[in-house]
Image 1 (cartoon, rainbow, N blue to C red):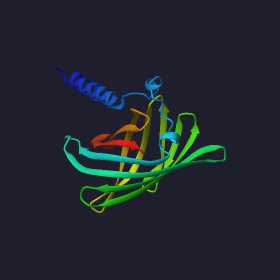
Image 2: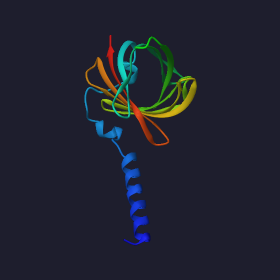
Image 3: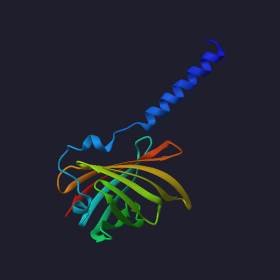
Length: 183
């Protein structure tokens, strides 16, 4: 094989792999799935969540529970939700995050929190919600900005499953899996 051909072959394989890595489900493919997810309805009141973080090899690195107190109000004609999340980790550590969610239009949301860099973008259809955002994640005294591709699926009116892929510079770091239960 000549050198020009090998270089082109390697470049083509690399570009193909990059395109495959960027592809994935689109929220609209869930438009006909039931039950229908209405964020202001589901995230209202008290919600319990149970989760794990697995590294890129699938090993469980952290287990945690979350207590969420949520409410919504109308501000300037838009639904605005507050999700007060209290995390308790299996190692005894605790964390707090308060999300402010704003419905921009039906099925389109933005979200902010103290440790979210910029705004989270959310799209919802049918029983699914896809959030994408960058989180300022503290690890051993250093803050890393990691990207989240967060998918939530309403299974029953009280149960939702959440899978979030974490990455940095396009490289997979691991996954957060959560089950939510609305009281």
